[in-house]
Length: 86
Image (cartoon, rainbow, N blue to C red; front, side, top):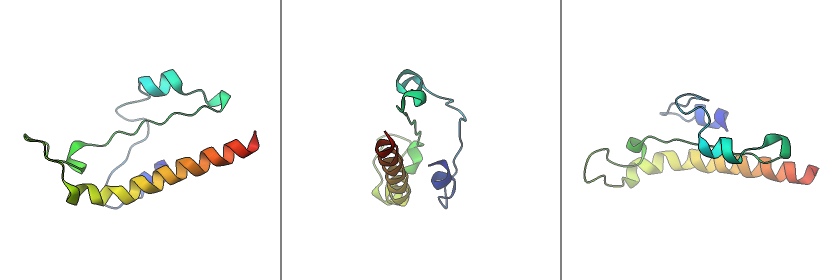
């Protein structure tokens, strides 16, 4: 999924950057037990105004939505592939 994020034109991505494995990933991710966790942080300016009244911006959100869809499809494909191995 990082490859998909890093190839998203007009956006930047980092792996294990500012948030190097937050609470959810540490608490619930157990890769050895085939229980994977993903944390995805998206800046507010990607989909909304950063200043009051913090309006949702469909014009901005629509730019990221195809990339998020590809990432979620990749996660689902990964999960399905892992499920067929067990």
